[in-house]
Image 1 (cartoon, rainbow, N blue to C red):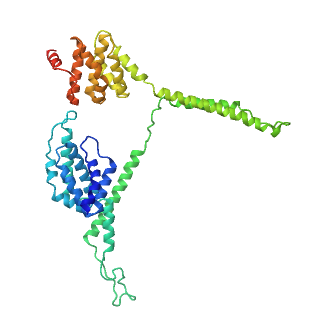
Image 2 (tube, rainbow, N blue to C red):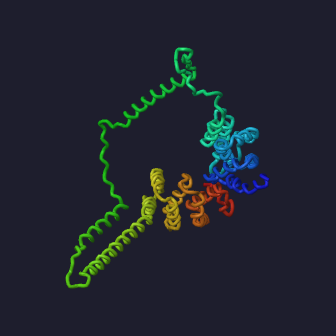
Image 3 (cartoon, rainbow, N blue to C red):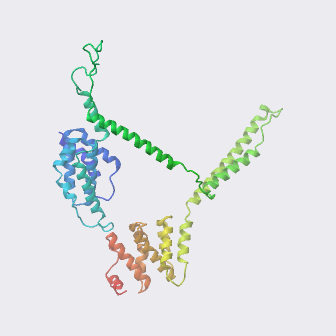
Amino acid sequence: MDKVSFVNKISILMKATSDDANPIQGYLYQEVNKITFESDGYRESTLEFLVDRLNKQSCHVKYKVLKLLKYIVENGPAEFRLGLMKTSHGIREATKYSGPEDPLHGNVPNKAVRQIAQELSQLLFDTELKQSPVMQQERLAQDKSRITGLGNANVSPKGSMQGFGNSPIKTKSSFMDKLTKFATGFQDRTKEQQAAILSSIESYGDYKPPPLPVVYDEMAAPQQEEKEIKHQVEKQVKPIQHIPGKVGGGWDDEDEETGNQTTSVSSQDGDTVFDGTDHADSWCEEENLVEQTLASSDDTLLTVGEIRQFISSCQNLNCEKIIELLNIQLKSTTQCVVLKSLLLIEYLVNTGLVNCDFICKTCQNQLIQLSTEESSVSSTKANKILLCFEKLLNIRLLPNDDTHLMLMED
């Protein structure tokens, strides 16, 4: 019956060991571990399923299965570990795994599979494996339920009249008692030494940190303006006075005026918040970076120093927006601007700051249009970038092999 009902658990295991590059979600570790605690049949079926999935050739499946097995060995029941030791042939083969190289990451996934398999093998056959807190609590509960000894061990040996047949029994200290006393004394001394070292490290002595310059915070400026506006409005509010001869003493009129003033203040506050959001959504820095880099020199191409400065500036900005701006510059009629834009796109592809799939989708149409032009430097550079996309993404962009011949002649 357990094997029949285990079919409901297969969806969780398949989701945890899916054949893709996405990592295992955190809650799936606990869900799979709970299955091994439900019954013996579930535990055996889970072990058979994971061992069978380990024989798949995909590096993603192998890596995820090994990660799950390592987590269950550390936190699951001891019977699961014993069963895995009997079927550890797949783990030993995974330590020597060498699958096909990934077009983007190279041999890194294969090394990751071998490393996690080696760690699981060492953990599986480790005789001094540390138990998890749950297993330690179960072991303590079992020890308390056992009979610790026979007789009344806590009864004092002393009689009512010591010295007349009731002499006290002198217990000899064992080697373990001496060893524990020495260890506790040594531990106390090391703690005192560590406390002295930490106190000397934490004390600054005569050192005084240099004063930091005051930096203007753009996001704090609207808040300061709001406080100043509220302060001015509070000054303009007149104190409430009693007016004789009116219904209610004139207090109702004052309430209406104060209500109008508060609504005006709230409207001013809303305007300031709206202005802050508009400022946050602007792309001024990205646009200035692209314009300054392309307008650095009109006749010559970019130097290596200018390209490195551009790449370092991109690390602090939105690189996807920069790719879109460079794609717009590819439509320029100036040949120098087009060449500079192509060169910057090529360097962004090589650095890996932006996903190659995003760059290909954004610039694909414009690059193909440039590659179809007559023989020129820009068409050759566009063909080179398209060939890089074909190799990295395993897709077909160029219609024929003429571009390959053009690059070889160049």
